[in-house]
Length: 100
Image (tube, rainbow, N blue to C red; front, side, top):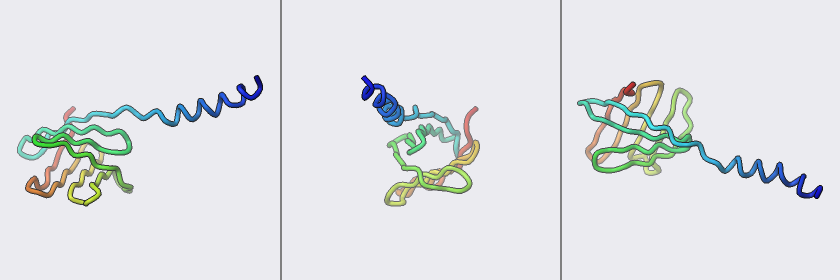
């Protein structure tokens, strides 16, 4: 009985550590009225474009949030209500503002 009482806090803390934050969805309006939806979960950004979905891991940044693909071909920067998406392969750079 004492062992079970001692293990309960350990098991409870392990379970609480494994629960992920629910993703937060943000809508942006970008250059040329391009709509952009982004889901953030603290570890990555899922960016929905017309023709594909990008999943970019979060990288350390001092002034905002920065998400960069492993091959460094896609970049999403976010600070406050503003964001920038830079994608190679013809998409270029989009400057975006959060939709209230």
